[in-house]
Image (cartoon, rainbow, N blue to C red; front, side):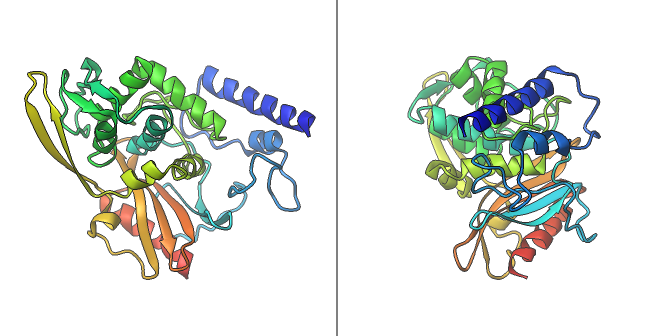
Amino acid sequence: MLKKNKTLFCCLLTIFLISTSCGREGLEQPYNWEERDFSLRIEEEDKRAPGFASGLCVLSPYETWDDGTVDAEAAAVFSLSDSKVIYGKNAFEQLYPASITKVMTAMIAIKYGNLEDTVTVPQEAVITEPGATLCGIQPGEKLTLEQLLYGLMLPSGNDAGAAIAVHMAGSIDGFSEMMNQEAFRIGATQTHFMNPHGLTDESHYTTAYDLYLIFNEALKLPKFREVTGTTAYTANYTNAAGETVSKEWKGGNWFLTGERETPEGLTVFGGKTGTTRAAGYCLIMATRDEEEKEYISVVLKAASRPKLYENMTEIIQKIVN
């Protein structure tokens, strides 16, 4: 068993080093199942890798449930309760994740940070890219790491992501390395991060399947469940002049805010949206049915916000149909 585990680790490490040190020819490159198939040594009997994939949904790229009803580039539904794949379309295609990136940022902040820390907002939090979502914090202001977590996840503040990154790792690059190490640790080997917020970079990419792995890991943290299921939060903190500032942040998941009706028999209890011109409209969600079974669903690169929610509704209905 030790020899097998050592072989598995070496194979995964080799794939990780290749994927992070070699140039990529673009996101049109398909997911290389042969690499993962070899590295995990999946057994034909139950299509699971011993040890590593225990308790995880395992999906082959040769399997698809695409019936033409989902027009987003990629989508998938995974059952956490019985480790089954309910739906999959292009689940291994490398795509830009936009602000779904912040799931990893939040997970690292919760796992490795002290949420009671006082964080002074750094200059790196000044983000001027057109269309970037912000929670409105300014350099010199002081917030707790917990407050920044809500600023990151509800209004999807790229400025909050930068502040968390610099506080946790000293720099954006240093935090990105933490993100990549964590992704590798949980088996998201077709993912590479360049920043904590998801602004477009050709070397910043993931897959629907890897996002399932990341979100599944994050849901193991009670604080993450609390934050990702919150629709509104008021932060009271001080600015650079020592004056009290109060901001209310609201979430953008239409299923949680009631702007989109959830299919009968299901309850959405968490999620993260993401949108950039390159990524299109993206959403990852956590849902439970009437038997308290839990599911993760993801849609990547939908053509519009209404289409995003149409696609998500379509795939989560497959849970109860």
